Structures are given as structure tokens and as C-alpha cells.
Amino acid sequence: MLKRKQSSRVESQPVTDFGPDEMLTDNADILWINKPCVHSLLRVCAIISVISVCMNTPKTFQHYPPLQYVTFALDTLLMFLYTSEMIAKMHIRGIVKGDNSYVKDRWCVFDGFMVFCLWVSLVLQVFEVAQIVDQMSPLSMLRIPRPLIMIRAFRIYFRFELPRTRITNILKRSGEQIWSVSIFLLFFLLLYGILGVQMFGTFTYHCVTNDTQPGYACGDLKAYGKKSQCLSQLFLVLSAKEGTSIFTVYEAASQEGWVFFMYRAIDSFPRWRSYFYFITLIFFLAWLVKNVFIAVIIETFAEIRVQFQQMWGPRSSTTSTATTQMFHEDATGGWQLVAVDMNKPQGRAPACLQKMMQSSIFHMFVLSMVAVDVTVAASNYYKGENSRSQYDLFYLAEVAFTILFDLEALVKIWCLGFTGYISSSLHKFELLLVVGTTLHIYPDLYHSQFTYFQVLRVVRLIKISPALEDFVYKIFGPGKKLGSLVVFTASLLIVMSSISLQMFCFVEELDRFTTFPRAFMSMFQIITQEGWVDVMDQTLIAVGHVWAPVVAIYFILYHLFATLVGLPMLQFLICV
Picture (spheres, rainbow, N blue to C red):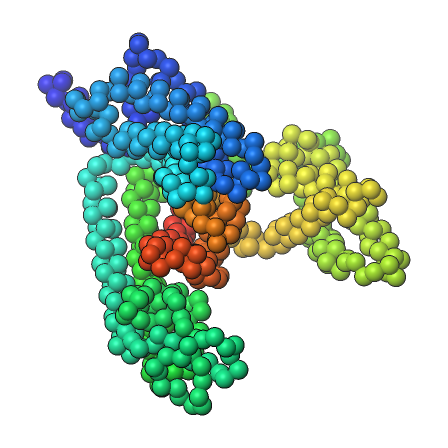
């Protein structure tokens, strides 16, 4: 009876999703693989591996030749570490036999695939160093999967506790919704692709004015208006022959350069046809379907948040960072938890000064001086050598404001005590500004990088409105929430930039992906949706007609994920 009770209690516990590093059992033969320091080392090595593959491009080695041997040494060391880890796990788990074998665990299979990619990259670099394989060879595409090892560095933070049935229900219900809206999006893409072919199927040339440069052949299109020459279009046309109708429809639906498509069609076809097609395309695809897709994704993440809130309980209300709780013995001898205000005066200042420091008049006076200081600083800019006297007046004003805020910090430290003062995160920020701006008024450091501390004083104006302060706290919250947003966005950009870098670094006619900084800015430009079509078009022209469809699919999927999935994920992280 006791056994059945214990077993039922174990079965009722929620299933915990851990990575393979946390599921290893202790073993006397291979003890090192279970140590936390080894797990931390392997996570750091995953980040080093991504850095190594980011440096592994022909143009980077051309500018910095020693990096070729640095990356080779790093990859060799990483190869031995991860291969040893893989062998150790196979020894503990078994390769095939058993319920917990190596090949039956998805994380282990992922780790093994990363080890294989690391071996392939290292062998390829040996051939490149020996000049058996050209560095500009397309074989560098074999390194494309390597940046995915970044997942190893952060998967320990993906751990959660939920019953397996609840996880299955969430994934099933969310998968059905996402699948339905994906079919909805694909239907409109195909619909407008077919309509575009039927309405503009003969549009293989773009009619332009008579003053066009010579050398362009005219097509068979009827020129509306006066006689004109025709400029051949390579990729950006609605043509059944080239098979680019769906790509053009998605490009127009992204609202990036869609008017140029419409104007090109107007030059060679009746106006009503172009107006009807492109206005309805923007309405249904850019406004209706995309917003429905985003709404479904947000609803899915909101449902996941509700499930976690039911498991963890309601979120506690936001409290001030200057308030804490402690046990206090009451008159009856019992203990109760009471709130303690850390802003309570604990210093040696006179009572009148402490009362003044806590008054709203003092608070509003300081914020007013901050507003005046920000206004004066915004008016200070270089107007030439003739404004030297005005420049000196701004410097004297900055000295006066710095002395005033230094005195404010000293008064607060005197009233609260240094321990009570530094316990508040807001006071820590104020003390940092005091130190930075005090150094800034030194003549040799004036108008240097220390000017940023003077500019950051404007952040203190958030305290003017309690509603604004509460809103900012809810949006940014503790550092963990803001850090999660930064880490998620940066990791996505780094991984995708590294993949694109290895995919296009050997294309000689393309300079957008020759080094990691260029690749990073190109992929960031696509996320911002500002001129992302230019990045795709330049790459399509550089790779040629053969690989153009594959490259177009790659950039469209990345843009689709960034706009329809990445943005709702960021909103979910903010709201959690």
C-alpha cells in the first residue's frame, strides 16, 4: 500500500523538461562530465565556437591573416572538448540500446550533429590552409549549421515544469491555429500571384521615356502614351516565365517599394488595372492577413502565459525597490512579517534636514533643476569661434548644476546613511551621475565622453509623474526582463548573420556579407523592414539565376519570421 501511494505521488508530479546535461546520472568512471563547472565551460565554448565561425571568412583573413590560425586553434580545441563529451555521454547512456540511449534523446542528437559540423569545418579549414581548396570556394557553405551551437549556451534557461498532457494540449491547440492562419496567408499569396500573372503576364519589359540611355531593346508591349524605349527587368516583375509572381506579391505586401511596382505597371498597362490590383493587395495582405497572423501568434503566447500563471500563481504587485520585509516580534511574543521603508532616515543629519529631504517641495525643486539643466544642455552646441563667450557661459552653468546635484547627493547620504542610500537602485544611478558629471566639469574632460553622464540626467525626469514611473517599471521591469529581450534579439541576429555570412561570403560580386559586421548590419536592416528589399535584390543579382529562387525563399522566410513571429515573441516577453 505504501509503495502504491508513493508511486502515485511520483506520477502526479509535473514533468520537468531538462537538457541532456542535467539528466546524466553519476558514474564513478566518468565523473568529470557531471560537474557544474564542466557544463559552464561547454556553454562558454559554444559562444566561442560562434565567434570563431564569425571570423572564418576570406575577406576577414585577408585583412587580419593571423586570425586564420587563431580560428584553427580554437576549432581544434573545441573539437576535442565536444568529442570527449559526446564519447562520455555515449558511455553513460549507451548508443542505441536502452530507453535513455544517446540516439533516442533529441538534445543528444543535436549535440552530436554539432560535433559532426565542427569536424567538417575543421577538415575544410585544413584543406584551405594547405591551399588544396580555394578560400572563395562554395564549400564554405558546409559551415552554415555551425552557428546553431549557440542554442547550447542558453538552453539551460529553457527549463520549465508543466504536466506532459498540458504541454501536449497547448502545442496541439496552438499548432492548429498557426497552421490555419498560415494556410490563410498562403491562399492570398497564391491568389494575388495568379491574378498578377493573368493581369500582367506579358510584363517582361518596363517602358520608360525617350531620353533613356541607348542600349536597351524594346519589347512587344504596346506603349501607352508617346513612343518609348523599354528597360528589361530581371527579378522584380510579375512574370509566369520567371516564376517570380509570389515573391513579388510578398515583397509588395511588405509595403517596401510596392509603389514602384505599381508605377511600372501604369507605364505599360491601363491605370485602373494597376490601381485595383495593388490597392486590394495592400488591403488584404499587408493590413488584414498579416495582422490576423500576428494576432494569432500573440494569442498563442498569451495562452502559454496563462498556463504558467496558473502553475506559479498570480504575479505579485510591483513594489518599490526601496521597500523590503522583515520578521518583527509583536507584544504577545509572536512573529509577523512587516514592511520596512529603506528611505527612513538612518543618518546623523538633524531632524529638520531629514524632514526637508522627505518633503515634496524638495523633491519638486530637484526635478525642476534637472529640467532646467536639460534645457540648458540642449541649447549648448558649437557655433564657431565667435561664440567663445557663450561657450564659457554654458560651462559655468554646467559647473553650477553639477555642484547643486553633488550637494543633493551629500545631503541624502547624510540623512539616510551610506548603507541606506546605496540600497536604492535609483540612488545608485544618481550616484553614478554625480561621479560622472563631476569628472565632466574638469576642463580637460569637458565635452568628452563624460558628456553622456550629463545627458543621462534627463532620465531622472521620469520621477515627475508616478503614472509614467509605474509604466516604465512595467515595461522594463527588473533587469532580468530587459536582459531577456536584449539576449533574445542579439542571439537571433548573431545566429542568422553567421549563417548568412557563411552562405554568401564566397560571392565576389557581393560586399554585404564579406565580414561579420557587414552581415550583421544587413540582417538587422531586414528586421527593421527598412530597405530589406535592396539587400535581397543585390544578393539575387550576385548569385545569378540558378540560385536566385533559393536565396529569395531564404530572405522571405527570415523576414516572415522576424515580422510575424519575432515581434509577437518580444511582446510576449514584455508582458510576462
